[in-house]
Length: 138
Image 1 (spheres, rainbow, N blue to C red):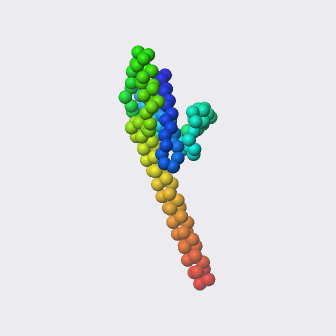
Image 2: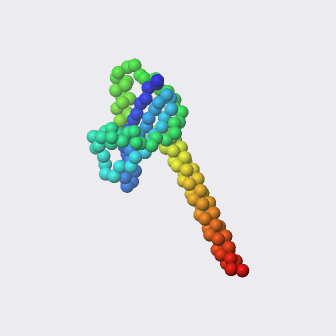
Image 3: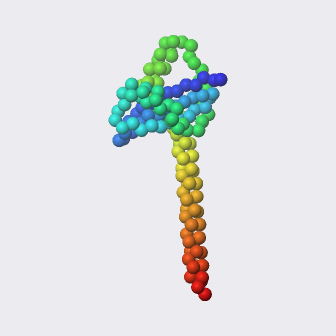
């Protein structure tokens, strides 16, 4: 079983605060996007993750380059500080979210096409029934 790492990122996207939760498992990255209303505090984000992590809908996994962990603790501290200072979503998480958006779009198209076909079939049946009722008396 490989390492699973997660990273929340919160940023302001006018007019809301948005959180992106990235999950990296076995060299594959998937992401989930959550819209917060007001600016969340660190404990709010932590509480949200601890309560709703298993209900988040993550995007399909996108392959990502496996990074080796640095051995120097000072370097690790610097990278952690840089990671905390950086804002916005990474390109890999953007790709994962875009893939999830495309899948949702395809599902919506399939569902609406199915509903249109059902409605057309229902109307056709109704017209056929009306035709039969018109000719029934003769």
